[in-house]
Length: 337
Image (tube, rainbow, N blue to C red; front, side, top):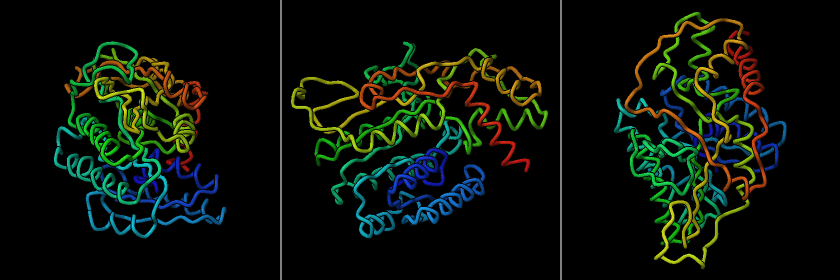
């Protein structure tokens, strides 16, 4: 089962799973946070791939917080693996619409946990976020770092998901893996994220807003590397660690079948270098509006990917310059053809 199947990561992951012969139960509410037509086009692509592969692919359009609907879907399909990528996304939007984040990211995730418990799911993988690191200044961010100072409600809901997952891992022996994603980009990306926002503005010859006067950096992670990590984790559920007692506390591991992992590139790039690469690939110089940093933003993100690399045996392969080339090629074909 993949929730958020019409989303950026959910779509790419489902493509991979279908190609590998998995039967997919997909859930998405196709909300209007960003253009639902993009989500519908992603799902259309999945239907084509599924038909070509003669695989089972069933889609349900509902909110995660709809208790009865989610219960019925779990009861009908009895999933072995659940990958929860559905959430109300967006750091800045959480300032304007806090209730939507509580409903989707807290109540919705609780429904997922409850039904995974009842279905005795073998492995729940769920999306957390690098935003949980909040005001941390130590770079790179490690899963063992304290995460007690979030700077957005979105980050707070994601940290809450990690705590809720630990509770179910401890009480009900539910194996859970939380993934802290770092600025995932690539073809079919989210329109609310910097790569799409900047590309749209540059092609339209409109100014781009550069916050903190450009003094920012992000650990841009190409979508294919992200999907490879998730795919390799599916068959690696965490187990109870008998060497850890309740007197030993670590944020990323536990005596319960629980873990938290960074999913990043491990090679952060300055925002201005990223803009320069976009300009070069598009062939248009961007007009820039340099602005103060938003309170809900962070200056730098950088992932320590030691844990996930050791666990999966994989390291990111895509160079940023090549990833941007693929992204811009897709953007031109999708929006201008």
